[in-house]
Amino acid sequence: MAYTISVLPGDGIGPEVIAEGIKTLEAVSQKFGVRFNYNYGFIGGVSIDKCGVALTDETVEMCKEGDAVLLGAVGGPKWDDPKAQTRPEDGLLRIRKDLGLFANVRPVKTYDQLIDSTTLKPEVIQGVDMVVIRELTGGLYFAKPKRRWQSATGRRAVDTMGYSEKEIERILRVGFEMARTRRKRLTSVDKANVLESSRLWREIAIELAPKYKDVQLQHMLVDSCAMALVKRPKDFDVIVTENTFGDILTDEAAVLAGSMGMLPSASLGPKSKSKDSVRVFGLYEPIHGSAPDIAGQGKANPIATVLTVAMMLRHSLDMARAAKVTEDAVASVLAEGYRTPDIASPGCKPVGTQEMGNLLANKIRAMS
Image (cartoon, rainbow, N blue to C red; front, side):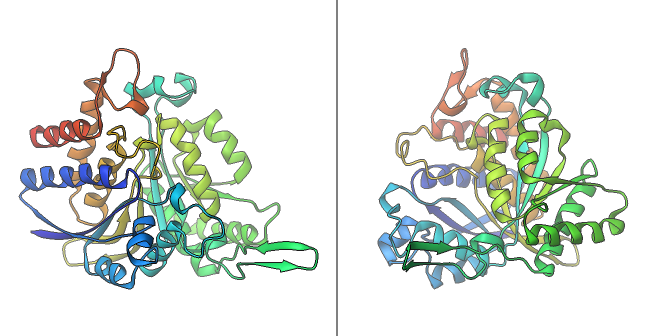
């Protein structure tokens, strides 16, 4: 069995953590007897520098021809001019839209070994295990009109939060179906007290609920959810929300895990069924940014990328056993006390990016 992975290392620490993700795939290859072929492309700032745009048509086509996409991170101070015509993030928005990746899935899980790595009380975060599902191709980031202009009274700008019934229904279905595989609790997050798009969101959620009678649905305003995430995070099982709210809430949830370097994500398209399995084409990326302040220093935490690879194995490559082994390897290495700088604590065994990647790859090979 062979799979083709489209690899977009991106900017900053992206190439460093992606190298450790490839190391993980090679360990899986050796253990499970599969072959991975890699096609590399540019996205983000490096693509602007080399190609003049944040993502080329050729790179999009390369990604479409593969089984999954592995992406590092984009952006950095070099490309932060607000007047720039092209920004690294344009590449992310385009690839999600062009590949039809409408559902961003972000697991948030705390490890007992990292309880002291956050600023929250241990009793608040111990045992947290949730999934946040974010709509990825609609809302403020995509809807029109979106423009900036000079008026008689000064500069003005407008962004539009627009959603269709179809867009809302399909992401809510992902939430309901995910909840069915877990603890059967779904929290739909909106701003229905203010926004028309949120009122439509809530209305459709209520209409869908009778089709998922085994799932307990609750509605929560986004500001209340933001507060509850840090006050009682164990209450949540699956959260589903629109694009902008999900972007903010998932970064907040990273605090629960101790570091953004611990959280993976998958951006998924529609399911495709074959005779033997159900697969989903996806783009897989750790949730952290390009962290240019530590790029090239060997300080980046590759665990989020390794867990992202596990998500790829499970969702797009139909390798659930390999995914579980990869996740267990992370837990085992943490239990042995190894830590990158972002999750370091007194008495730990400090390691750098490559050393952590080596430990995880070796552990995967050794797992029974």
